[in-house]
Length: 216
Length: 309
Image: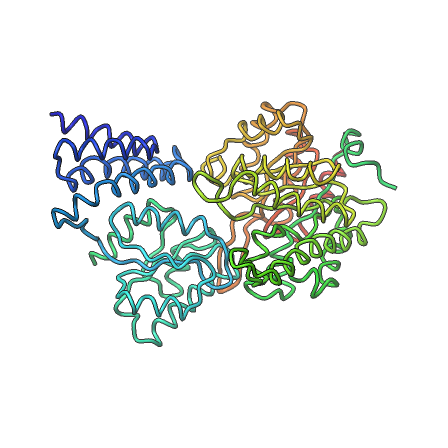
């Protein structure tokens, strides 16, 4: 019962985007001897789900999403030493390499998707902006990625999403990794045309789509 | 000889702005990944050609090709390493010179085309970075970035500082404060309401307009965004929250998509002209267009608006 109340408060701290509160509650959970994994799964995680849903429907916006994920991340950091002690690890849903394609320096959308994927249990390798096809391929190989996410915000740089796919093919890696694309000018049709596996319209949708890709 | 721009707006006659810069320069051969700012120094004749095409189409206010002209964006694109930490002063000095030079030069190019009769808006876009506490850009650092750009634009002969495509209210405030520190020109500010009727950062048209009214920004509005039809909803909200401001309507020609490898924007010049008339009915004082538009769109807008004026 007491645990449930604490979990609910943790959920609310994430929804409200309060990192300090989340840390305080994480400490309280540790003091109460609560399993840190349970605290994450039943405390913080449901909050992120609510925020993701609110973002998709237009009730919440980028700052909400960023502050909530910050609250969750900092709360988890408080729990980590205890997890190490118990030899626990957060289960990883899969490895995602993400970046904005070459010639394009738009960062915010890509960062948002990376943040949401990370908050939802993916191991995310964020390569930043203006990333060359070769760099995508190198890191995909290096970390043995399950999914690669390609962001493009310009009609002129959309073509570089295709360049990454072609470079993956040349490197013989295309069959090992799923490709998801996104960015304002892109579309499901564009994904199909360049041979990507999926398209997502926003960060919340991206989480669901990537979950589907790693299951497939 | 033109009146000061605020007097011109006070006359009540609609001012026709220009259309897209970035997508037009790309059509003229600006390579992928190269920002329009690069052509200010490398191919000034192309920049002037575009300004001229808009003036010939009827633009009375042309914006400088400096949307990405803050140091924060130029440092990415000019590949000039800005490693202040290890004291690489040479790179820093190079960027210092180029930030000022590009902005001043861009304003001079626009002024040359605008002459004495037409208006030049010194264009300022977002830094592309997230402001603290979400990101790392502090308010004060942002003010300095914008002041640097505004000062250079004013030095090149702009009539006003024209801040556009803002989504974060704090960043917009920093831009206004920076511009006011740097020069005495009137400062305008427009937002991109591209996410469920708000900016991507969640700012509603009313919130934006209220904040701008509080700061005494004389001309405010909406640019870029999604469908140009959305302005029909947005403008009245801004009008209500800021009854005294001049309203600016400068939407995209729709959202771009690829058809057979060609970029297509949905809104035709005819459609944009119909909508422009309605923006004016809703109280817009400055009308133009943003991404995906061309001089043909501006010509149609001008004909519709001036004919019916």
